[in-house]
Image (tube, rainbow, N blue to C red; front, side, top):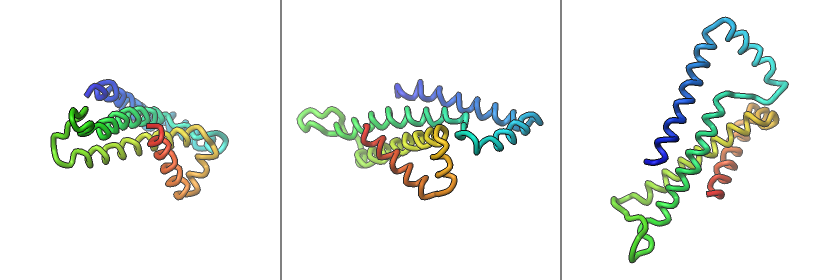
Length: 147
């Protein structure tokens, strides 16, 4: 609940960026800038102003997954005085699912940053779906290990 307040407010930034992009696309100058950007993509790394969403995903994923893993590991442990008590059947399985979704979210955020920062990674991802899949698996595993 405590994390929902600051992380929830960060989602508003993404909405503002989307509205700005929408209004820019509607103008004639915006179309010219988009064509210019499309022509320069091959010369430099792909830059997407929505990479802020990737950063938000990384923070949300890492922090929330860490807290969820803590809840999972301490569920009914120690037996005599558990740190986290199980209140409903299937809570442990639910926490595992939540942890995986949050870890994949953090992995996707890292994947997006890799795509925006590295020209070579961006080229490989455009060429091969297999490379994208392997890269997301790599980044998700990296997030899991760091938690």
